[in-house]
Length: 100
Image (cartoon, rainbow, N blue to C red; front, side):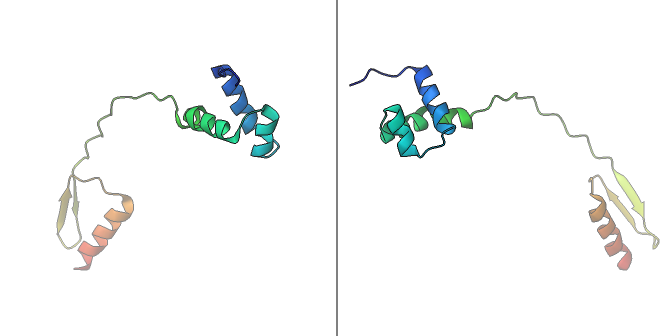
């Protein structure tokens, strides 16, 4: 039975596997490893690095407070709100209020 592979050997095996131009079975044969050994290395080491990414966590920034507004419609009605409407929503609100 062969000795244990070093982390560097495993890394090289996995890099070679990702760059391979032959089938998985042929790659394992060429490297002298079993399919199950490759599967183990992929589960244990190979995909782990692909899933992890270095991130920087910053404290949340406070959203700017919405400026209250008042709209006086032609019919004298007033709409007062502290909400920050999107343009389309505000246009719809005005159309509905003026229709009545």
